[in-house]
Image 1 (spheres, one colour):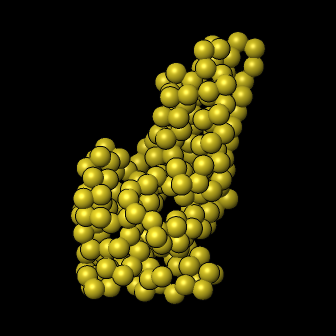
Image 2 (tube, rainbow, N blue to C red):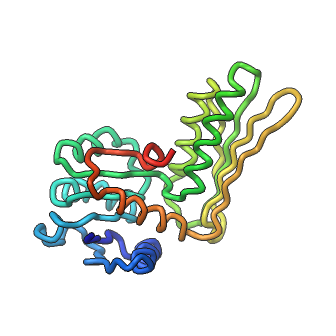
Length: 220
């Protein structure tokens, strides 16, 4: 499998390390994905961890030229329908997620189940998320997905509170409070390595896969 890494910052280096741990040498690590040779792109999976504005500028090139893509960049979900439709139209396999951590995917599943159990029983919901000061989108994409899960399952729109502190990799907490008790579900990342590992797992899953998929739908 050939992999091109789009965005060669901290996350890009972590993805590179996780690929090599599996015996996969990246074909290219690029800060300018639109400069990649289309001949290479046709045979490669693009793993994108860039910035929202970069992905907005680059997604059409990725969809048109790459065999498949794994997108961990967030902050573009206001144009999600447009982006997903472009990948589908171009026939580029896409796996996207606000968070590629397998632990966070488990949190999604737990919150979905708990919300359904507590529906119509008088519970209110609150979501908090804390990230490093470099994170641009606020609230996080993960918090937004948790909010959607709670709203769908519990039938209540949750409050979402965001904090930016130091170099915190990521903490997400869902609190469901009733008249007699409170249930808290928390995921705390110790590093961003889990995101890189999940993205590599997703890249491996693109082999033989077609269409546009949210990562959690392939895991849960």
